Image (tube, rainbow, N blue to C red):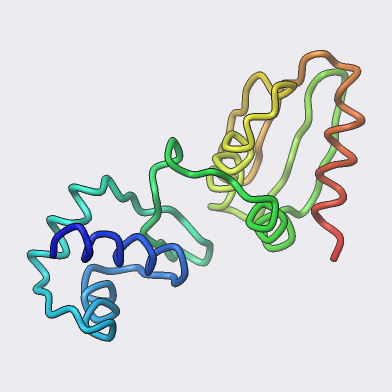
Length: 150
C-alpha cells in the first residue's frame, strides 16, 4: 500500500502544481486513497520532495534536482515562461528572469548536464553560466534562443 501510494504521490506532483500537503492529500483522495495529513507528511519526507518557486510568490512540491531528468519540453516551457533576455561575453552567458525565478531555471539548466556548461550561479533574477570552451558559446546561445520560440 505504501509503495503504491508513494508512486501516486510522484505521479501527482509531476502532473499537477501541488503547493500544500492538504492539496496533495486531496489529490490522493480523488485517486481513491484514504490518507491523513500525517501520512502525506511522512511520504514527502521519505521521498525527499522539496518546494521550488514557480513565480508570483508561489511554490510547488518537486523532486530534488539530482532526481530530475530534464526534458527539453520542460526546459522550453520554463524558458518561454521565465526567461526575459540572454546575453554573453567571452565564455560567459547571462540569462535574466523575473524576480524569484532564476534559481529554478538555473536548476533546470544544470539538469541538462551539458558538458560545455562548467557552472551556473543564480541570484534572484539573473543566472551566470560559465562555458568551456568559449567557442561553444554561440552554439549554446542558439540552443537557448530556440527554446524561446514557439
